[in-house]
Image (cartoon, rainbow, N blue to C red; front, side, top):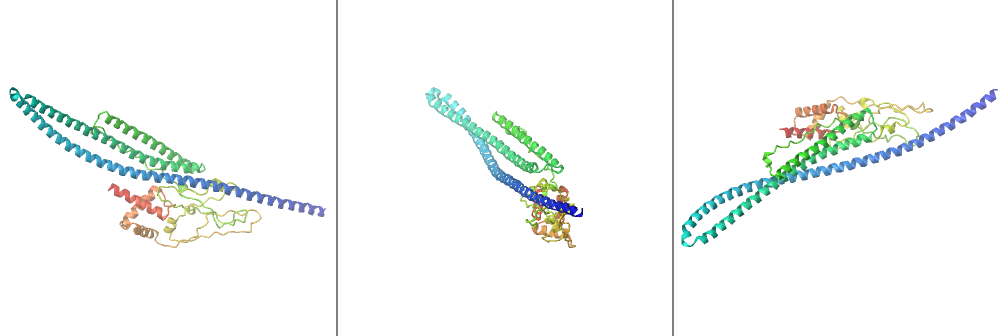
Length: 409
């Protein structure tokens, strides 16, 4: 009986080893498949982002050209208006002189009628009438030219406003494209609804602006003076929805993981922030959370570690290139003795705000510390947090706030 028990135990050990090899092979194949899917999603997302950025730059260039053309048209309208007034005064003066001369000639004709010179003065009268008709024709031409200039002014202003609304529409579509490509979660559903409402409002406002300007243009063509029509107000849009931390962080794979192992050992990849040329632009995540949690869910990231960024690092007074790991994945069965201890770098005590203000004063020497502190407070109030910002993005936000204050002044 003991020999028979040992034999069965040996068979069970062999079967267990085969199951482990089969599981490892299956895990490796699924890992390779998930890696290919992740790369496809990443390539598609980058392609869409690049296309939308190119379209946004083209619209900005077109807006600058339209603004320049609008200024030239306004200057031409002013020149034409001044010339029309001068011509009108000159023609009115000549008209009075011609009328007076006509009356004088008529009196002379009556006096010279008996002397046989009536026909000569009638010819002179016809000549003056022709000149009078020519003057009237010139007046009509100048009036028509001014009428066309008013229509051109309305059309150029309409195109300028529509172009601005189309730029805001492209921005909303860019946000919606990212939100639709992300997996539906409670964190993305609300921003998606807010951006969809903003996009619908922009489109309705654009159609309303076009209809109002088209009505004014039609009225001017029908003979109504532009000065008698009500001024079309410039449409105002509410501020865009606030961006969540999910939209401001991006996940990148940890290159320190050994590709020879069939399972990850060590820290979970730390979220990094992508640089952006526009402070309002999104930083798209490079990893789909649904794909990273396909087989086994990872432990949640702590709030203080999940929001680490270059600006936060500068505020904490540390410049270490090593980031603290967010969490550790438990080792699979059979490797219980392997332990990975995360390293945490404690920041050196320093005056973080003073260091940040010194950097901003170097970038904006025309400002005082009080002004920059007030602007930082406004940015923090608008965003609800300073996490997720690089130093370059913070400089751009401060520059935008200074530009707004300059325009208000």
